[in-house]
Image 1 (cartoon, rainbow, N blue to C red):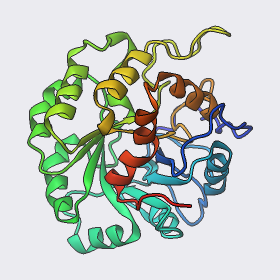
Image 2 (cartoon, rainbow, N blue to C red):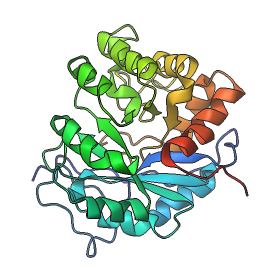
Image 3 (cartoon, helix red, strand yellow):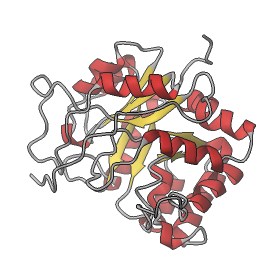
Length: 301
């Protein structure tokens, strides 16, 4: 097991955002790590997070003004989706899930997850204890009958160029995590970012998450008073201007794997608000795109 350095706990001393989020806002990417006696971690996990409870996540949502959420199953649990399944079943109108499933998983098991509120399977190239992009076609074959999409978190943004043709031919929808994980120093004209954009343009069921602004930045700790993550701004603005119908938002709370200067979720949302081009794009990003992607009902209080 590789646990790396001791991880930081999330920042919980939060204030309200400078601008109230739209009614029905959906956090499309977050994780919970709690109740360790009930939900044991995989011995072969790559990292060991601090306890990050469901109550803390929901309290953050209350402060931020987020109404609904998608729990993305954490790699530390390998293919045991129990923690995510049990949680999203507590309020199926409010929560959806993204599962980790292995090639050969019985369809009856996927049906159970679907009934619980799962709407996607996750591929992660970073971790050896889950499905990766080598399993793309096998996982697509398993989930196609359920209308699921596949969420992909690759190891390096440059991997998109090698994967592009397979992804274009994939028979199910795709979601690219964390702005496609293209490094900020590469710039928006990098071939891997252009590959992401081609997929968004040409494959109508392809989406991208505007999340983890800090993770791909080469300037993660700018001087006081300087803009946060300026190298990521062009990526986000390009996606929100030219591909806004294919963008969803997520916090990536509690920011797994961060060991230096834990990002403040409210600062991140305030920053993102300055990058959104107009009110129509804002409503799509925070509400309506995710309703379509994850099968939420249109929001009403």
